[in-house]
Length: 236
Image (cartoon, rainbow, N blue to C red; front, side, top):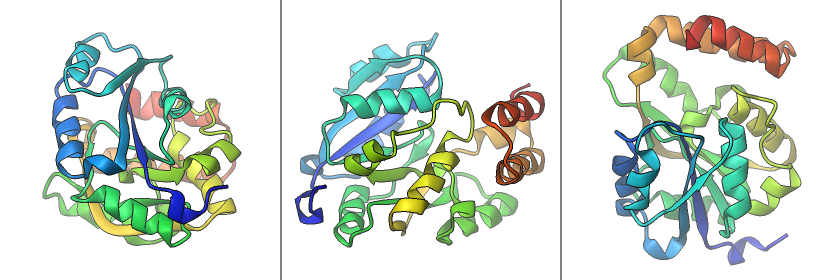
């Protein structure tokens, strides 16, 4: 495994599906909030969009790949292509903080081989901000993909990446495994994630169902059972 002082480049991997209205904003934010020399590549992995996501992204001077649909599959596919020492997984509707690359490299240099940022929502909902507050706590139960995730490529490979059996909760399952084998750090800066799904589905209702999915996973429910619950209560 590489020594931390030789780990200096970041590959950013963004799984997308029909994100033509958000992809340019995200790519511009990534470039504006980081130092070019630290970013090896920005990899957009399209899971079969039916809109213009891929063609729009290509115009932004980033790498655009196409894979089978499913965030776990898309992120694994992007990781195989990535050439950076660190893999930074970012959702399409989550904006990283200023100088996020420097924060990640500093975290890695202190022998934390995986981590995330704290989170805030792009709205003034006291209810959502209450739950976002818990993202500062360094415990696996307080983790989620919207907080973004970074890890060394060596650790990612050692864990065989994301478990593609998980159509949902792929981030949580992978993070649990990270906590089991390495030191995980929660950086104090905040990513800003979209509240659009909460606005569409109902803030309290959606947070309840996400909580139930966490709870069911802690009880040992299979990936299939979790997805059945998601389809019944969130997707429809």
